[in-house]
Length: 365
Image 1 (spheres, rainbow, N blue to C red):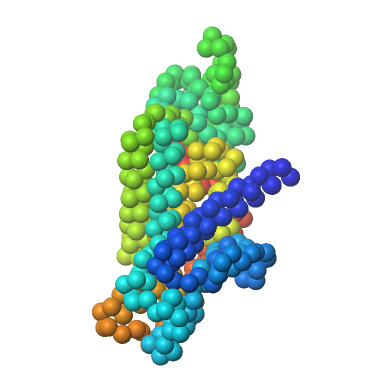
Image 2: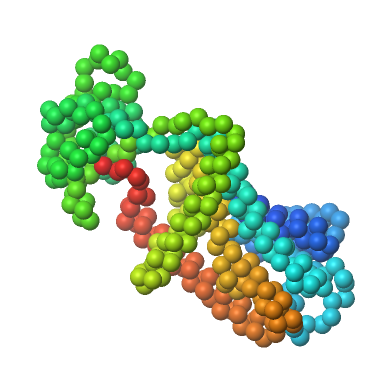
């Protein structure tokens, strides 16, 4: 029960932080731009509780899968709308004044990702994989877990063959698929002079490569970094993962293959697992989620921030707002696309969870 509550709390904190930062970006830039904000909501749907301060209603809604910044006049888009009665309405502002308000949400997600990446590097250091034959993590459901291997165990030999480097251990395991092997292991935290423990297991054959796998990853070591170096590395990670995501999606589209997507179910499962594995993993994952939310919202899909941005840029080019009918049709199509993505991602999550698929880890042997 305690584990469940901690996992649930970690999911709520992660989603809550990412959503709040996104909506706060829209909110603060709208306020600074002189736009009246009627409602600032964390969550979607009917209000659960809230309060009114000044001209804005601040509330928490029932469905914690998003948020809303409702600006005056925002619900009446299109060229045929009535002239704004209040100069502080959203559509009373010229198109180029609306663009910063729309972009502010994803921009805040990117800022959060950058700061969290930098925090991880500054507090824990720059991670790299140890070359030593030391177990860093043990995957659930693999032979290593069944045999009792633990994080921090140092593998001394395999079938009497001495191993000191991870690459030697990996090669020996790869060559012994479906063959029983004996490992000599020095337990984590024991005296180097203590007797080794013998562990017997059978590497599982990977159907994709034919290599033997037992479900262990190398030890991660951290190199301390200064503040400026941490910011540089945080910026690098932000750019790298953005470009990597775009490259992955482009590659899948070119190959006409379905991308591997995770919906709320899968993301919640990964968040809960990362919270148990360590604070640095948890913070790094929140940064990744924030970056993903920011990037996804910039896609030119109606209903997303990128879709609104597209309409305002068109308005600037043709010097008149897009017609109400076009906006409504595009929003209906965009909503269908988003619901389709959500259903597909949720179905993929459920299939992975039912199949017991573990997330891939670098160096899994």
